[in-house]
Image 1 (cartoon, rainbow, N blue to C red):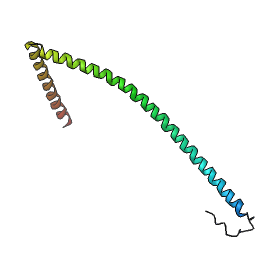
Image 2 (image 1 turned 90 degrees about the horizontal axis):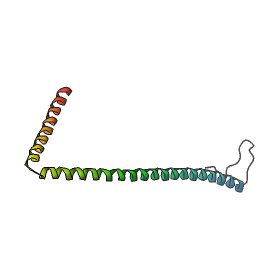
Image 3 (image 1 turned 180 degrees about the horizontal axis):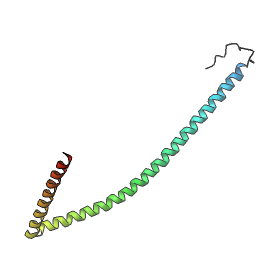
Image 4 (image 1 turned 60 degrees about the vertical axis):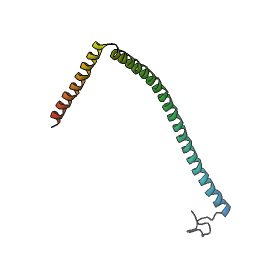
Length: 115
């Protein structure tokens, strides 16, 4: 900040204190206007980003609803198959045993490849 009480150097023209204060105020007003316009731009960017995010979330809720319907239907069919008779239970045990065996074999081969 400038010292208003100091004397002018090297033949500089002395401004009155009111003119100096007015010049300083104008400089600060310009700086403040720049900062306000920057904040306004940031606020508009935040608003557009939040609107885009809300649209994305809304579209995801529809996707999750359709996935929920698909999974609930699959669970209903699976529970109906398990509860329908002895032959289906035997088949389900074979499928579960086969999947477990597949995971064990895959794990074995993957562990051998890494070593």
